[in-house]
Image (tube, rainbow, N blue to C red; front, side, top):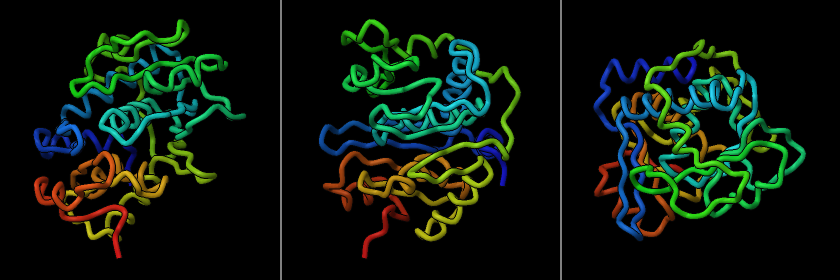
Length: 246
């Protein structure tokens, strides 16, 4: 399998305007949809910021303390484009991260640590944060939006480490292979649409948010919560479900 950036670029060339990542919150009515082109642009901007603004190098660890959301998918795409390792983590521990990316609500949890911390806006349109942040936490939106849409550094390779979850680690190539296997096991076919529920297992959750639809030329609908899943599945015309139900 290829690396994430190559897979994303191939998707842009094949059908850049088609949906890739959709986020829905039935409780609030929020719905945000990103095409492959929009996702690639966000990935390039984030990756440029990681390499330029934050001086990260391939192999550096980026802790993502973000809920299932379109922002998490774009930050995964950006980190992998920059060749960094994504580590899901909800509280500081012994791991040494080069950067922590979190929400405004959780910024204070990380603000006293050694790593640099940025907060991501959960606004439906990704607007800058309006709430006060701890003095040592930056608004990621303001730092990322000034970056160019084209990635300016060396592209990643499939052998670079990409994801560490629950003691398991994948390179970018292994991640894409695992994502393909997971999607097939769920019954997802090329051109299909995966409904990713919030109660998916941790590894499934992080694979499903971007690698699975990329690996199978499909798309994903990330749903907040699990109530009303049948209605969302009908409205979004999904063809597969993660986690699978008995």
